[in-house]
Image 1: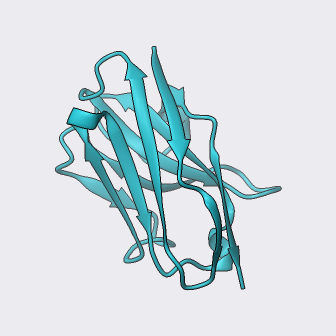
Image 2: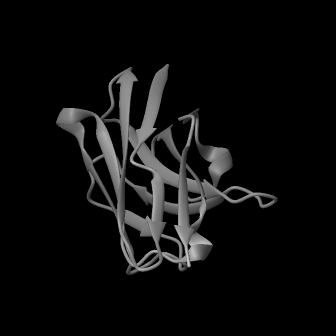
Length: 123
């Protein structure tokens, strides 16, 4: 089992920045690829960003590319999502997720999930 706890969400004006953190506990953190997903009210959960277990490969949804940066610190068992130039359409609950093996962009491939943190961007 891997337990994931997100933090860092909040209310920010359009154009602002937030940094989300996700700290893992339980099984060894390093072999797991990590992803950030988000879900707005009435919409399906969607991929935002993902990172390989080594941190050497990162992937982004087109909607966040160039504005969001995913990173990880395996020594601290923490993955981060730096979000810049935020837009109202970024408003959603953001979830951290972990999966064994190769990194993926489909939320169905992830085994462990955090409880989510709310991000609200006002116009």
